[in-house]
Image (cartoon, rainbow, N blue to C red; front, side, top):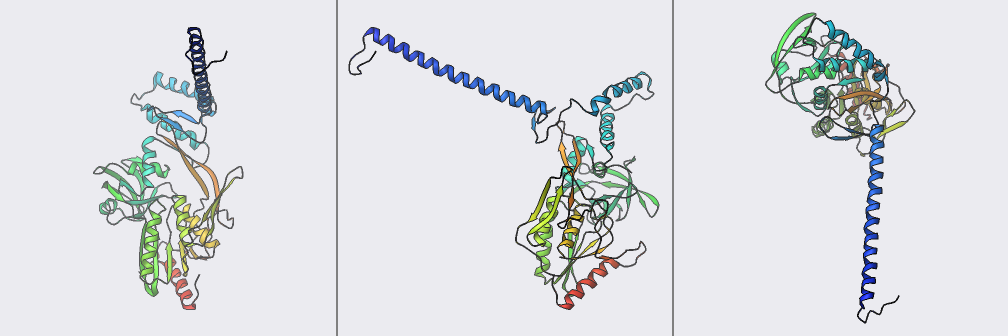
Length: 430
């Protein structure tokens, strides 16, 4: 039926047109609703799949966590041992002598022991409080005692540097002291980050430390305070040779290092000694940024997974330091320190002086779980620009110089000074 738009509709025509419009409207609404239903079903299906595969989790605090690695609690060793753990728990509950067992602490210890069973000392479980402290330790500001700590071979925590204006030094703790107890708890063999978490705490609170100094046990009470980490110290030596000491590679270290280099340049620096002895390492991106500032553009370090996947980290800022340089290392120079020394050596940018480094050439990542806890685990091995495999071996110095325990002078530093003076005297730059 056709309509003439220039004439009024008859009653029958108006009803027919209204029915047609009504049908069309209902069709549009039904189509939109159907589309929305399909979209909702599709999205729900994707979300359900992601939840099942472990990419999406709902935390105990109600927050939704999305992660790029799927994790589930369905199958695995935990499922296999769950029955026996419950049986052991039931056995102890039936006649265990002590009645003040902390279930939460017991569970945390089970998680720690499980990861320890993998046989990698760098794969560790962190409680929520430990994880929070770990994150603070790389930010550059925290509340604590003001000392650089690292793991000693005997399992104790070595104080490699006690800041002179910080609580630890004021309480009497000195470089070289080895912490064996924190508030009476034996921390020998404990993961470094976990032990450090015990040492840190709220501003104004006290922590009791038991240390070994010259085979003698000493006790100190230290009042915690806000610590602004100074990871770089420097000064100008004779013959216009700059000296920079880097205690660790934290988030704040790159800018501190660049500021030190700029200041020394303004003072007329012609040679540079970078001291990373007793530096336990730190943040990978920090050491990469520092090397980018020193080296010409190019490969700095690369990592490789067990599947052979490579990830390269290269410099590209166009800045380079072109003066004679030496890098001081020892057996306590580890991880990021070895990346630093290895790259400087491969580019023949500096003379590496000291003793064989620690030999930690593997990379860890940290994944936070939905209850605030976290797992640090090894994911790859790293290699220097020329492919040096450092893990278990360390970086071999260009010039091996031992520093005896009873030395009355720093013979390693003297060797570096002698090297720089020789290069300056020959008129050669690196």
